[in-house]
Image (cartoon, rainbow, N blue to C red; front, top):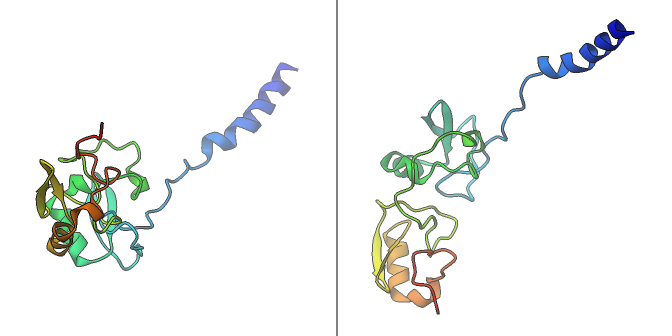
Length: 148
């Protein structure tokens, strides 16, 4: 009886032990322009700790190379889940004008209400400066002073 039970347990457990571990979800979007899809066959890529980071265009490659920590996000690069990542230099993650584009502390910036606000590019900065109240949202700009 014991031998039959052990054989049964081995039969049930063995496939689970021998099966390949589940693969993380594949990257589908650029970590810089977060709504732009990538194609693992054709997109350019960089590597971080053995993980390929696919980027949608040369502009994103340049931004990534300038400040990789700003764009290493498991939300957009699932293979980074569980990997120790460097800290971002700033709390703000997205441009207030182009809300689907991530920002870095090396991107253009302006001071608004006493805090530094970062922008995807100089054009976005100009738009913000013309009408800051239109774009100043504490959801996108967590560094803004809290309303009382």
